[in-house]
Every structure is written in structure tokens, then in C-alpha cells.
Image (cartoon, rainbow, N blue to C red):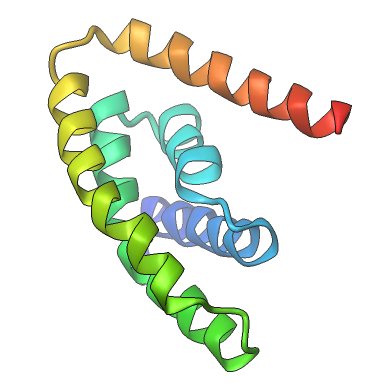
Length: 120
């Protein structure tokens, strides 16, 4: 029998998948806030858990998009390969910055992106 925690994680994973499929976002905008706000994860634990989950989510999403002819593998490589260096740098930086600062910066980023989407 699944625990309440397992059911919460399954529900959050489903919501993340829906947002990922619809908008191409999920980990940073749905999964991390959900883990922090609803499941009591710390910022760092939520980020690490989200990055691991995104491997599975992105693989399934990319495969499905490829079936629809919406995948440009060359461009994905040009984005993904340098992103590996970026995530290593970002993770290292995250370990040196206080979690409150990370929360405020993340909130500011989400507000900026939301405002930009509304203005466009």
C-alpha cells in the first residue's frame, strides 16, 4: 500500500509531466516549488531531486516530441552539452549561497518570466 508521501510525490510528478509536455517546463517551475512548499524539502534537496527526475521526464518528453517530428537533435546537443558545464557551475555556486538568497532569486526569476510572458 503506497504511503501518503508516495501518493503526494506521484501527484506532483504527474503535474510536472503535464506542465513539461504542455509548456516545456516542469522541473524548476513546478517540481522544485512543489517539493519545497508542499512536501517540506529544503531548497538544495528539492533541486537535486528535481534534476534527477528531469532525466526521466525529459527522456520521455523528447522521445514523444521526436515521434511528432518536433525534435532537432543538433540544436538539442548545442543546448545540452554546454548546459552540463552550466549545471556543474550552478550546483557548485548553490552550495555556497544561503538558501534564503536562492529562494528570493528564484522567485524574482519566476516573476520576471511571468511578466515577460504577459507583456508579450
